[in-house]
Image 1 (cartoon, helix red, strand yellow):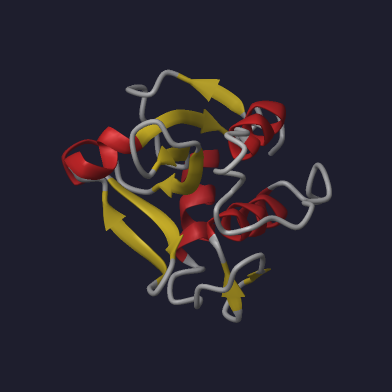
Image 2 (cartoon, rainbow, N blue to C red; image 1 turned 90 degrees about the vertical axis):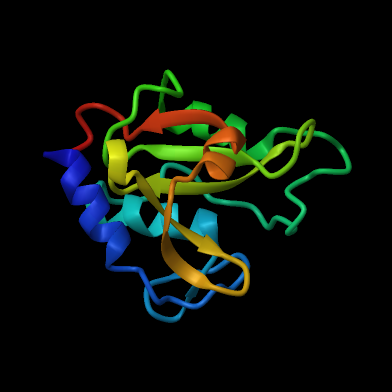
Length: 146
């Protein structure tokens, strides 16, 4: 089952320190680096080279850089159609661009997500109401990639 494989790999990154623009299990990663590392482990080579990016994720310009990349490489789903292993994109405040992501761990009453969070590193957090309100998009890894 692909979702279980994705979640197991993401959980293997728990405890990796937060380090902007990095993607090395155990050494350092940011939220995009976590997704990139899970992709490499379960699918293989990354689909494109990631250019340098700032921590504000193009907020000043309003460009939806992260969302556009997700639309290029992942399969969009309805936000409420949750499954283990889904990629969740978040807007950290109303009217802002999507600039944080995580991978769905548990679903239903025990919903969680795994993410690299500034000051905490890679952790698994409850997908609580405040986090759910911030979800702007949900994606699955591409079908047939496993």
